[in-house]
Image (cartoon, rainbow over all chains, first blue to last red; front, top):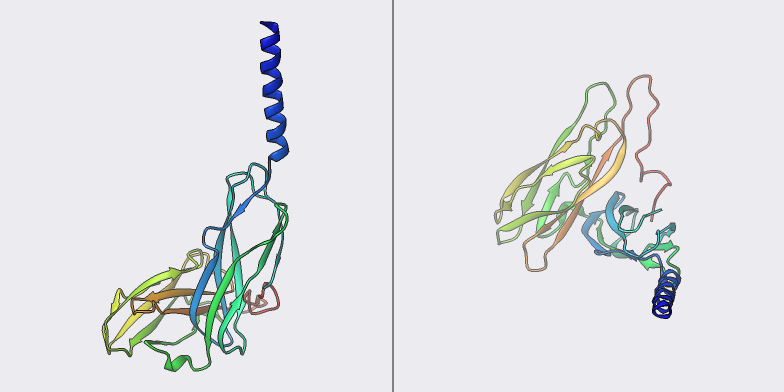
Length: 67
Length: 172
């Protein structure tokens, strides 16, 4: 009985450790393209993209680099 | 920092300058997820003759709600003229609800002109900004038009704050 309990606990701990090792942040952008269509010259236009954190670890946005 | 399951908005501001024709930009987002970076994509067709577009012409094609006194200017009207031969339904695609609301005509009949109204929100009346809204038409190609909206505030005795996006910050 003790042996079974120890074995079960061992398996549980191993699974937990593997889970912790594979935990990772993940960024999802559902609508990653936006078409402004026709726009006049010499104007400032803006659009909001939604960013979702869908991983199993906190997501840090480090930098946005202009395209 | 975004907790698991949380969301946030990323605002992309684009200055069309003297560009012409179709432009495509792909700003990259670097995160602790590691490479490759995720990208967003913006597409625009920049026109040097916004007073002769097809299938609609918007007048004025840029909206300016700048205020240089104490009287609050919180509403502006614009027209959408349908220069095609088919009735066109109009749907709003993108807007800045924190700053303004846009009232668009549902349909602009062939050869006719309809009026739209932009009204600043309470927050929109208190600050300078440079934003825009985008609508789509029901023609075969689903044509889209973006109308820039700018507001600069200068009240007596108060130094003007430049509208964001009209300076050097946040341009892409």
